[in-house]
Length: 204
Image 1 (cartoon, rainbow, N blue to C red):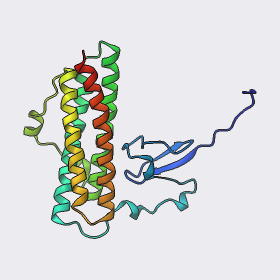
Image 2: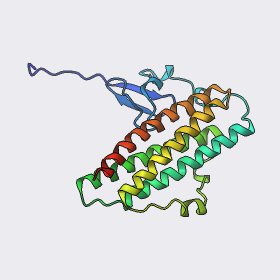
Image 3: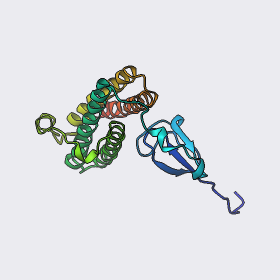
């Protein structure tokens, strides 16, 4: 480098899955909010040319099956949000590994919460009105042992991936099909990440 100033050009990007806007020099590989893959981003330097808000809404009336599947998606994400938040706070952080795992699951909890928000908007309900059943919470207790909880998290992500992939085939509405397919891919990413962590923990 010759020491001269170099200008970094930042772009305004919008995720077409969660609708969030973020700044980046180039198209990132994943949405920092919901984890959607880069193929779902659009660059919008000129706000007047940004995708219309109607793009993020479902056209037509929801069928009973679509409502049921959206509600199941919300419940899945809220439960995972709570479980991962518990992992982040209860897991042993006396080692560097523990600190990294705690921060990882804190971030994953936020991503799951973002997913819940996306599904709530599609169903037309307020996220704050959605609660996880107490009996379900009691049946999904965080142990505080990384090896056990990470193993449980893999199963959660596998279930979510399978659910969303299935739900995507049970609708003819483009918006629903897109969101479920995109988030199924995100959950597959999480399966890979958490399976790797599980393998490392099991090797000890």
